[in-house]
Amino acid sequence: MPEASASLRTQVVIVGAGPAGLLLGQLLARGGVDALILERQSADYVLGRIRAGVLEQGSVEVLGEAGVGQRLLAEGLPHEGIELAFDGQRHRIDLAALTGRRVTVYGQTEVTRDLMQARAQAGLRTVYEATDVSLHGFDGNSPVVRWRAGGRAHEARCDYIAGCDGFHGVARASVPTGALRTFERVYPFGWLGVLCDTPPVSDELIYANHPRGFALCSMRSRTRSRYYVQCGLDERVQDWSDDRFFDELRSRLDAEAAERLVTGPSIEKSIAPLRSFVAEPMRFGRLLLAGDAAHIVPPTGAKGLNLAIADVRNLARALIASCRHGDEADLETYSARSLRRVWKAVRFSWWMTTLMHRFPETGEFDQRIQEAELGYLVGSRAASTALAENYTGLPFEN
Ligand code: FAD
Ligand code: DHB
Image (cartoon, rainbow, N blue to C red):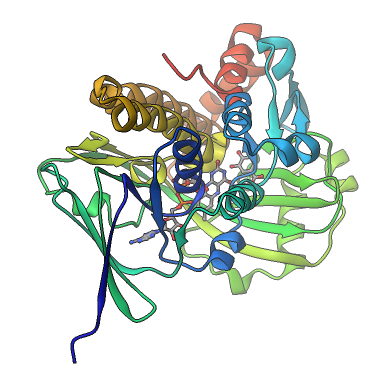
């Protein structure tokens, strides 16, 4: 017997319930636009992925406007500076003094949890464990999204599809080849990250350039630390015991930080490859891409999550104007406006990655250039300001 299939209608189908998809759903609901979210994984799986940890001031403002800023304000750690470590010394970049702006340390998992909770409270629907999601008709006026869940086939007719399904999602892959231009740089190393319930080594984040490779000391709270070390692409997590990881991290820090480092059992350990990637444009008829579905940056500048939030801010406004008032002007310019800012973050992330890591092909000349640039960066107010301006986040419209 053929299985029953279910059909429904909504204004926007959002593919992906990561931070981009959930925030878009939240902003659309507040703007009076009906949306359904489809997510391939379970809610617990999404919450278990440890990713970004630093929010730009503008991102904090957008989350506040979306009505999910309460816990972020109470529990997020405002940071007014970062430290750059090289040549055995640490140098503080005073973000607040240089730009009047600061960042907030608050984990991506917490942003996701707050958005999930707001969605559940408002009675809005997210389909988790939706498989075989496929997109149709977005080059015309009547897009349809099909998927399977609970052993049944489903479809939703809609006005727009928002592809918020990350780098490996189905949305960008559904665009006909030839309609998309892609730009990519793959870096010859990854980051090995560890999360543990120990007090952070310092009050502020430390980005270290060391002959053994890059290291980053970050945190999630005053009792939970997040540490990373640059590693080879052929490394395997199972070859890194906690002791080996902390010995490596300690060896890349200045003596004082190394002395202060408190170690403890890891509660998460993973390796992430580093990549820059941009797909242009971000709109194809009635399909709009946002966040990692459209672009990836290496994590060094802490920009990935913040870029997703900036895209979604633009996209929500444009979809609300179209769905509520029939005004398509903002949708027409969504891709071009977003990409202008995206490329600036791609440039900054590439620059900070190049400055802070050891590349296998680095010769003595490149090494001296890196040292000279680091010296210039911490010695020049103009250069420090350029770093601080990008790190705390460029204006949304530029
Ligand atoms: P995602 O968070 O990837 O969400 C996309 C969602 O779509 C996922 O839940 C996925 O399951 C779902 N999905 C995928 N395919 C389908 C499908 N076919 N159907 C339905 N749903 C689908 N950024 C930083 O700033 N700092 C960091 O330290 C950092 N670390 C990272 C570590 C890793 C391992 C990764 C992968 C990324 C990291 N990032 C970091 C980047 C940052 O986490 C991302 O930029 C951010 O998650 C982007 O949000 P998003 O919602 O666009 O995409
Ligand atoms: C974190 C990750 C980053 O890439 C970064 O630049 C700063 C902090 C983190 O996971 O805490």
